[in-house]
Image (cartoon, rainbow, N blue to C red; front, side, top):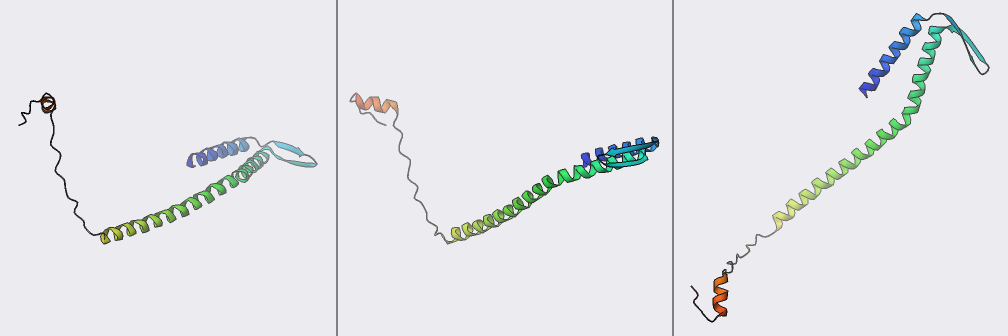
Length: 127
């Protein structure tokens, strides 16, 4: 946004310097309207009119963007409040849970391939 402002200011400065160097009289005719002034005044007037038109065209998009950001910020605040409420509820419920010890079972003994083959063949030499 700052870059656009800087570029616009440079264009305006170039327009003013161009207008000040061209002070010859000029006649502007638009439909039924006739206007006679120096070329500098006509150029500055057209530059101002162009800036005004750009402002009018860009205003609705800017307003829509700001409204969308406000809605999103409001929704973000609601979700953050909901999240903190749920975290408090989870913490409260975890404190209410009784501490239950789960018995740890001994792991099953490993049966090796030698033991399986040995028991199939009838040789029951288990260690």
